[in-house]
Length: 161
Image (cartoon, rainbow, N blue to C red):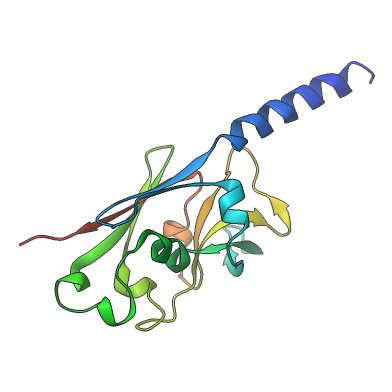
């Protein structure tokens, strides 16, 4: 038992060190591209989102509203979401290559009531190393297909003619 404790502490400190250097990148067609650390995100307003997993259990995630992150980067919202800005989208990229797409309009509170957050906790605990440090959570969808683990970047783009 005495040998297991130091090894466990070493592994946990290594994981914490790796996570401390993490930056969520926000780029693309925004006036202010960002790199947000976990500390930066922890200082932003917090929201909750519930999500049913594959076995039917409901979990409560906490994190930052995607809309708040996009606002910080200067993405169009509210009255700016008209005309060509209606063809803008958010591509969420994960470290394993998985990608999901949202229209900016569906993420904007002036147009839709969609609750999408960048979560760092599940049921009051940090996401596990294999799932985190961040997960995008799209509350209320029938399938959790767009609620993706290991989120690394948010890219704003626009569909062109």
